[in-house]
Image (cartoon, rainbow, N blue to C red; front, side, top):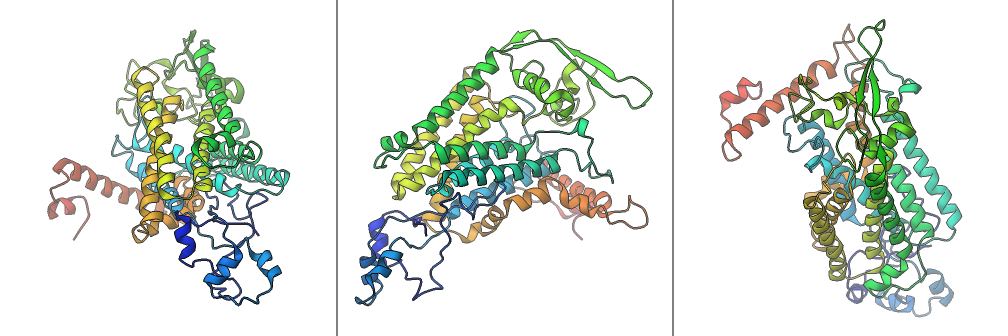
Length: 514
């Protein structure tokens, strides 16, 4: 059986509280699971939700027996067999953080069309929606450090990690590869020649696998008794993070991007496709047309397998409704309709680094028991990453989610650390859990919610049930009307100010209220 730590710090005080319970005398108070020595049977296979338990500072079995009023004649061999059994608790703050990220994802998906400040930035810049992906990657890293803190067989753990990553990758291909054609298209299936190979779940699968392998193979045997010894124990992981960052920056600013072409099929199958030329011939460009991230994806993945609705199509040069999608302006540049994948190959390199940053935050939970010391060791890298990200953006390395620039990684990872500290203080330290019960539940079922909400699986299922004609289904008739009403309500609320109440006649005007 594995050893587990209690979440709360100040171990001496916790030991004195008598919280160590004999499982034979108090079976309802003791919750034990198998050790995560082989990589954690309890961790969910698909990366978005990994079990996370903390482990306790060893306390002698004899001391625990005295505190529990055990009979001194209890067999000593039984003490030895059970001296590593302790109460385990989930790190609730991580569930709450994950649930809050899922809620944020749903909110920006629904409100992004109404509030431009919420929707993804068309190119350079940072909005609320741009925090969702880094937060998920950060959470995966923290969870993995807790899952793989004790290993009996690295080979078995590696095999299980690869299997979980493969399952997540296949699920991402199924959900985001084009199998579901759309909410208003009652067909399904995917043309392999046009299939999108990358996506959100695929990126998480890659980051999950690399971080898991790092935690399994790249850590030393040093005892951790200070911040410096913590860095020494995991110095190989930091070296890898530095190498990945150097590789990304070298390719982004060093590779030459030649001119390229792409084609768009015409509405008539008899007419030849339209061919557009994009003039580049530059190095170090981070604009939409001539960046290395897009070039690598076009060369390796193939332009026909990239995302067909690029985020930069919402820029002023490409949309008369900017910052929303819309018709092309008369003088739109040639690259506006070119496919571009925001979860491309090179940008996923920096996504892995975000996951490795989360891994470090989890190491602090594993090796440091006191609340104050944990928060101090979290605050230093969080504030440093925030300052570094802002400084890099100020000096020209712009924050860009589509390219996953180094400044974007620093800023979002630092923000994730700050938010995690706040949730940890509120939930695990102060014990305020009632107000976070919903987000905690969402965090424990994050993958299911992601599939049904973000991937439109539920609406696609619902639109299969119709009255007489396929167009008479709840998705096409009812859901757009509800969204329209709520968008009108939000716009009126913004127009009249947050401190003014909407009049009853205004609610009646948009069909809400009696």
